[in-house]
Amino acid sequence: MFDNVFGVHEQALRLRQQRTELLASNLANAETPHFKARDIDFRAAMTGALADQNTMGMARTHGAHIGSADGGASGLVQYRMPTQPSIDGNTVETHIEQTLFTDNALMYQTTLEFIDNRIQRIKGALRGD
Image 1 (cartoon, rainbow, N blue to C red):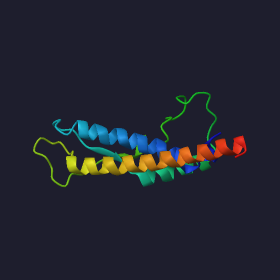
Image 2: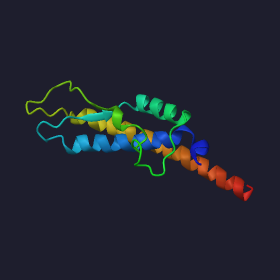
Image 3: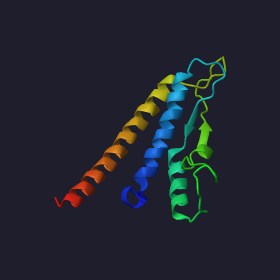
């Protein structure tokens, strides 16, 4: 129902949340031997989410019955290649992860503010403002 109201921003918010979780996991495991840093190619994930939205899929009675209900990002998770490999096999580079996390958080907040603005305008229209 709200796909038409929020447009691409609903998918963007979902993908930004998933990316936040991955980047937070990377930071939490910065000292874990052999941990491999992962990330989502946001642009490719958005392109895929928009393509899925524009194609007619099979009807589902439950989100878990066919495929995944994660918006399609799970197949786009990639391992990051480190610029300076660690001796213990860990590929997390804290300074890079922190920068990516901050950038993603700002984009998440921007998307959330857009959605909130849209909701406020709809509420105003319903009240007759």
